[in-house]
Structure formats: C-alpha cells, structure tokens
Length: 62
Ligand SMILES: [Zn+2]
Image (tube, rainbow, N blue to C red):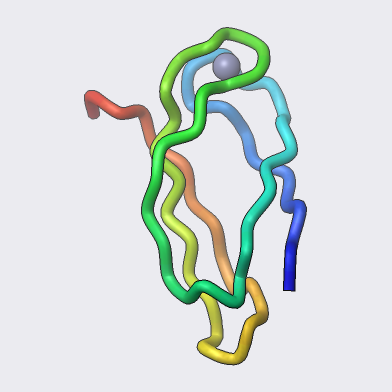
C-alpha cells in the first residue's frame, strides 16, 4: 500500500512527509527535502507483503 511516513531531514532537522509505495519492496532512492532542497537518501525496508517496516534517512554525501 501507499504509506506516508514522516522522516527527519538529516540536513535541516525538519520533519517532512514522504510518499512510499511499500508494495514495490525494499527501496533506496533520493528525495529532495521540501524545506532546504538538499538530496536525502531514503532507505525503505518492507515486510515483503506490502507493509512498510522501517525508513531511514541519510545525507547523500555522507
Ligand atoms: Zn532539509
């Protein structure tokens, strides 16, 4: 299903909401922060049945 988890931007610390399609399985992609426009790497882990388990953020150039 489509999830809309809140994550914390690793650059500016703002909480932003991202849209994740958990049915697509584990994913790793870049989403620009809505506040500071820096690229955030999102690591999505699903349970394999379309449910979001965890989402982690890190700066692109860590
Ligand atoms: Zn930010």
